[in-house]
Length: 154
Image (cartoon, rainbow, N blue to C red; front, side):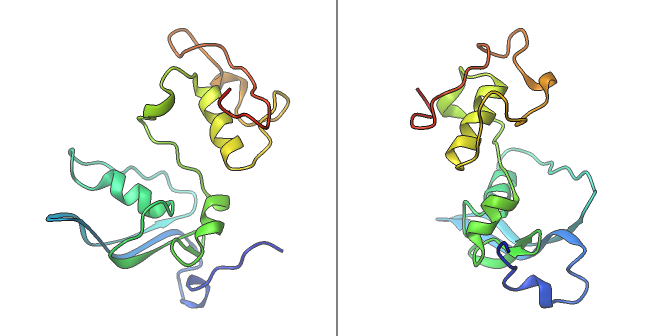
């Protein structure tokens, strides 16, 4: 049996939410990136995170995926607290930033396989990590290639 949520399962009405953001705050020195943000995103909803540069979108995404710890408040994703259940968050979610600075020369498929392999997933050529429509197209970088399991970026 997989990991069990630490906190959200005991809260009435929260079990039907994919994401629960409750009073989240994050500061970087003098800059208040997020202040008291609360929201609920239900399963099956397409939700956009929109705002100007510096509005806190990337900070929130990093908090939601367990890559950054909030200074205040809490976030639960799929019933898992992103701080207390950090390992489960990485299994229950995936995050691929729009700007992936380290490997910009890789195609979409190559980046997806790299992320999968870094997470310990099988990302071989026969693995359905992505539909055929997601493979290289003109201008998207080199054709997909598979790295040996021992060297994901070779």
